[in-house]
Image (cartoon, rainbow, N blue to C red; front, side, top):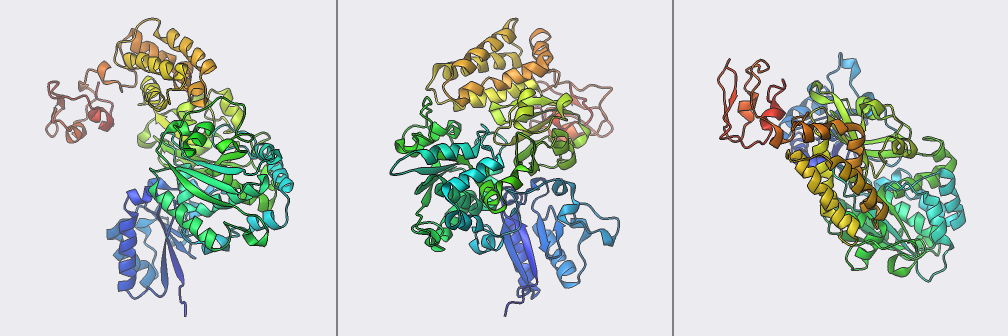
Length: 595
């Protein structure tokens, strides 16, 4: 007889694995068994819970008690106090309550309270390796409705009514794309998923795959029915081992349950899919390059038209969306397009998932209605800037996007509003930067990434981004000269107008965005040989400012090359012959005492 009374939902996403959740799980299993509670308590490893900054996190159900930053050494005390004596352990709460009556649940924590979950509705709540748990939450009900009660035209109609736009970055209307492919006549059609997110700081799709892989499969199945496709591919980078493993399990389970394969749910409809592992090329996020890669060719884009909806994989009509786009589909079919269209703004419907990272207190995965302001995301959900630093900018849309400075913090997050301030939605990367960030160096970082990831097919991208990178590197090294800024602007226009694909066309954006709002920093580097943010080693003196030094010794303790001389109650000094200009002294000094 099953006597389980308590479920312990332990985050098992990649982020929490990195902070020791697997050790915590093993300790939980051992302690629960040791205390004879293994018949009452079930330990479930979920996918990403979202609150990466506080991991590993544990949700106790049905009590709804949330524990955070667990270590394996906490477990014996936790099990004894909470599950034997009935006394929740306050020191492991997100914040210690004022009294025993205010034990915080997830919805009491600002990070969770201000979100609205559609794509992430199952995050941290189910075992991602159990199809039964997905089905228990209305999983595959939308697929059954689409296959047994709706025509392909009905499905496309609901998607068009919903206003869902592609979440991979371009924002093209999903229903319209499906309609184009559905009208094509062919003996074979394909449904593809781009799970190859390559933006620095982006982990939205990976987290969905790790936490709720069946949401993707169900969305692709509905898409296949809408356009009449019988085959599908999920293009996922090999660097996502946990996501790939859970995807493989989900596909096997779906086949076993008759939800993939022939005559699905006795509907007469056939559809099956497989995972194709990419080698991590950023350019393969572009749809035609991704298609070439699946075909066994080098991942390089081709001119369009014809678009993939007309002539895609192996020259057959093809629909390609990303993970987040497909993860919305089941809820739209189940609850209706009008329900989804009622969320968000007039032109940007529904919710958007963001990977909130960088100089922000609450790093994690965030899903909010379109139209939510940047300030709400960064300060109310993200907890603001740590260490009492000032906000400087937020990079939106990855390397292809742009930075949004402080004066635009109240900008609503939707496609049109972000474009007006020089950024883009992109796939959902949101990198917050504080006042110690050098925007010239930030542009250099993204230009280096873009140049490295250029496939080399077209000259504007291959040579143009290389030349732009060389100029920006010289500026950060103190070798900039008059006319460099104007040359960067001129080259940007040419590259944007003549590059073959989106990577090249948006490649100059990091430079253009930083020049738009932080031109003074470029001028300081070039004309004053000074880095205002003190991040470019070639322009720094590496001296201790005597009247700012608080004699705390943090610079001494964090110097990897023993280049700092310090004694208690004494001002530190830097031995320049030993200094390797690693910036650890500057980074760890809370008083800005390093020049």
